[in-house]
Image (cartoon, rainbow, N blue to C red; front, side, top):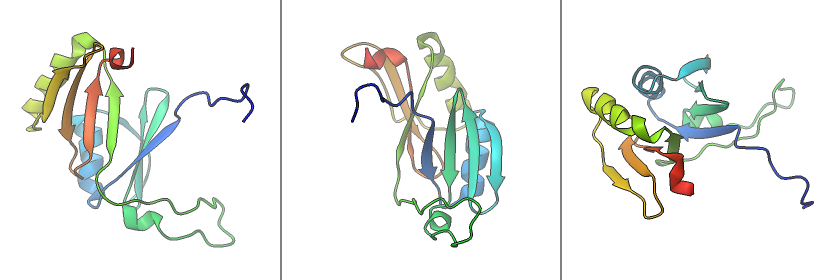
Length: 139
């Protein structure tokens, strides 16, 4: 690949959930993301900064598009829990932890990385591993 053609950034990330309604409520009501598109029983898309979190019901993404589909997106579903990390200012990690615990969300891990920066981990209703981290974890 040409060295002058690097990708600009991550634009979207996908997570999968069997109970799409519960997962949608979690990302909207607990995490506070703005819902930007939704097809009940198939997907819910959320704005997160300059990126998008795509939340899919896995079975609904396994069917190939019809030959005359307006949007011929190929199948791309997966199974099992994934991982998603959101950046937060270091001074806000405790605020996030307190907010999540007040909503009944169990914190699975809370630690400082050897190179600096703190992460907290928890699960969404679909069992995905969710992390909120100080961007300093990557230097």
